[in-house]
Amino acid sequence: MDITHRFRAPRRTRSARRTAGLALACAAAVLGLTACQGPGAGADPAGPAPAGGRPGATATGKEPAGPRRLLWMGDSIGAAQAPALGAAMRAGGVEFASMAAAGGGGVIGGTAASTWRDLPGKLRSFAPDVVAYQITTYDWGTPAEQRAGYERLARTVNDAGARLLIVSAPPFRIDDFYRPHRAAIASAPRVARDVAAKHPETVRFLDASALWGGDSEGAGAQRSKDGIHSCQQGSAAFAAWFGERLGERSAFTPAAPDRWATGPWTGDEVYGRLGCD
Image (cartoon, rainbow, N blue to C red; front, side):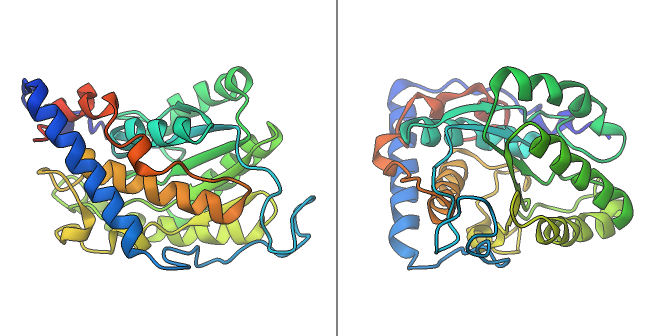
């Protein structure tokens, strides 16, 4: 089940000029994304929480306060998104920490052991008020097993005083490694949406297909050469989209991409391991 082998692309040495050019490309990609999206683009299909459904909710269903500390969870795809997401959140005044990990990070099946071992301590030490879990590429199991995993995650996060956002995974290439698990990969977001619908006051589901589309080979998916992870441009696009979704749900104003998309995060070693240009 270990997918860390997918990071073992040769490291590439990049000059300062190349890194700066890449950062500018990231900024252009993100600014283009936000310019193209109109009102309601990428809206949560589950809709806003009912007014008054969560204590303190406004008449529009928004939380009265924006997030102060965001904990990000996921697998190696989430780890590739974390540098951009962290930069965007910090630029918006939100403290950020990531538990996303290659070969780990899930909440279902054998690969979940490290998550359940580490999550309680992280919730205590970082004390997030929002936890965002991106469905991993190996949330494998029956729908009942998936439901149990997401329900356990919701209880654990909510008992720690935080709200939970479950984000659907981006489309990725179904190769020989994933092919035996296609049914579970397809059912995971449906189950997660159902779990969120049962707990509208404390759990939300974000459908990232509004950003990526459904075709891992399509230009909109912005996958790296391996067809699974994102490089800097895709990670920046996700960070901008995620910030906008937070702004729709709370009193949070995401930072403009030109404040963070050209930062030092673009040189993070995760992109070198992926062989990003």
